Every structure is written in C-alpha cells, then in structure tokens.
Length: 389
Image (spheres, rainbow, N blue to C red):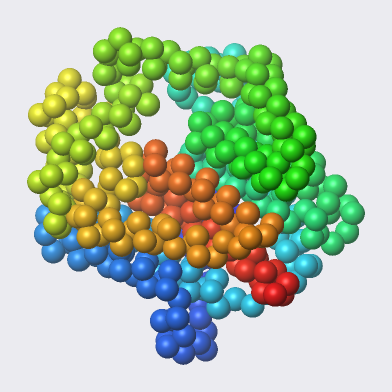
C-alpha cells in the first residue's frame, strides 16, 4: 500500500483490497459488528451514498463515494490483525524508510538540474515535483507521519544498524520536508515536536522539553535563512496575507481561496441543514455561491469547501456532520496514560490539521493517508498496551 501510494494508484487500490481480504478471510460477519469505529464509518459513508437520491450530478456523486470504500475496509482489517512481531515491524520500517528516501531523491533531482527555476516557482506557490502523483500535500503529510512513526518505533527495532538507519532517515526527511516546504506537512511536523516537548516536560524532564522547543525555533529560523525554497514559501505566505489585509480577495492566492470557500459555505449552510445539497450537487451549489458573493473569481479558481467538516455539513446535512464528528473523535477511546497512548493522541491531533484546511477525505490519497497512519499507530500501540497490561 505504501509503495502504491508513492508510485501507482492502481497498485494502492489493489494492495488495499488484498490487505482487507487477507484480514477478513474466514472471519464471521458478527465479528465486524464489534468494531464501533467501523460502524460509525459505515453510517457517515452510508449517508454519502444515500445523498445520491437527491443529487443530480452522478459523476460528482460517484467519485467521493467510491474513494471512501477504504473506510469500510481498513478499520475492520486492522481490527482483526494479530500483533506484529518485532521483526515484522523492523522490515516495514526499513522498507518505508527506503521508499521515502527514494522519493526524496526523485524530488531533489529536479532541484539539482535547474535550481533557479524551481526556487523561483516557490514565489508563485508552486513546489518541487514529488511522487504520489505530485499530490504534494498528501506526500508532505505522509513524510511527517512517517517521521512520527520512526520516533515511536526506533527503540523497539531489532538490530543497531536498523536504529542507526532510522535515525538517519529522521534527520534527512526532516531536512527534506523543509526543502519541499508544503505548509500542511510542516505544520504537522512542528505540532508533533511541540507535543513531544510538552510530554517530556511533564515527565519531569523540563529542561529537555524546553530544549526541544528551542531547537524547533532555531530550525525554523535556519531553514528560512539557508533553504531557499522554504524562504520563498514563507515570503509568499506573508505576502498573500498582506494582500488579504488590504482587502484584496483574489483567490489566486491559495490561503485566500480557502477563506473564500469557508465564507461561501457558511452563507449557504442555513438552507441545507437537514439533508445537505446532496454530495453530487455540492460543486454546483458552491458555483452559485461564487456567482452571488464573489463573481470576480474565475471558474477554474472556484473551490469546494477546503474543510472536511464543512463538506460533510453542506453536502450531507447536520445529522451526517454529527456522525462524522463522532467518527473523528472515536480514536480518543484508544488513548492510554503511557508512551503508546501519547503517540496515538499525537497522530489523532495532527490529523486534524488536514481535515481543517483541505477536502482531505474527498481524495483517494487523503483517505489512504488518514486511515493507514492512524490505524497503523493504533494497532501497534494497542498491541503493546495489551501486552503490558
């Protein structure tokens, strides 16, 4: 699945199906009903499906429904998996590290061949070519999440060479995520380090916790000073907000475009509280909102709500939003007062970032990244907690 995410959508789909069949084979359906997170997922995806009854746009309805099929498969599959051995976790971690290091080489090749061009592109909010179909937001986020996994698993790896390789991977990928300089991935990474600092500080290691926060600040300042792509990205972000503060609502600036989509959604929402627009008609209703309130925004810049909660609310109504909120909050039931629980909570917390600023679960890669990294961490943390207890 991880290789498919980076290299091939078809491979990702095939691997996801194979993974699910392997876990569900021979399991009685009554066991499925014991997985409450899966049941909540069935409920909100089911409302997406039913909204086709009051949607006129079949194509606009079928795609967001079809990409959510892993919501009906992966929670069950992970819930039925046995505990992984230390050797299996080592193999996965080393394999993942090699895949991400290879993906880094792919992006850096372009920067090395024409540095002036690609650095200049960051002035226009364009980024380096990446794997994962150049879906740089999901790609950057996956790097940040894999770094978190490496911090979690490193002490459990078998073999000193594996621990050294993972330490090297953490350092190199932290540098790489600053070079690619995508806001979502950077925000998730820094949020993790901040949570780690707070956790360590409250574990009676105040000096170390404060030291981590200081290192974060030095890293960000150094990246701005010495990494040209990161510097250009920060400058673009500052300029776009300066434009917004002066009353320019040009959605050509990505952050302003998000704010416009929020404003239109909140103005439309009171008319669609019960059943929503129907997920298939969401885009057309948003286009009407643009024509009414932001007519100067060209059609190719008109966005869906760049917030997953607003998409569910406007597309399927407030009842669907309440079920979706319960689904998002449910993993907190697996948080325990130990190191494993800290990492489960941290993964859950950082996953809120893309849900708040992207139509994250409306895309195949978004659904995969959210489910896989959440469930992978939860499965391993729960297994270790059960052994300790």
